[in-house]
Image (cartoon, rainbow, N blue to C red; front, side, top):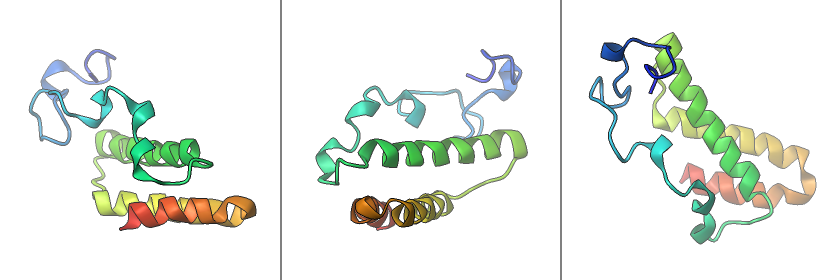
Length: 109
């Protein structure tokens, strides 16, 4: 993928998660129906789009840190950062605080 965007040469553009193996089906960026993710979790819909965007943004940031800065971020660290941002939004959106915390509690569990 990075090779196709002229960011890395072909020999260095394998999967960062699988340590150099070519990309294969099942990678998160190949999830076919992202709009359906989270619908069956029973979590509040009022902040679903925003919560999913927080999740995707932090996954993207962790991926870019690995690719461009060679900084490894564990999934647990990424989740803690997501939960921290959701807690900040809970304080900013007082009317939706419990909805934000439902998502944060789900991710933190």
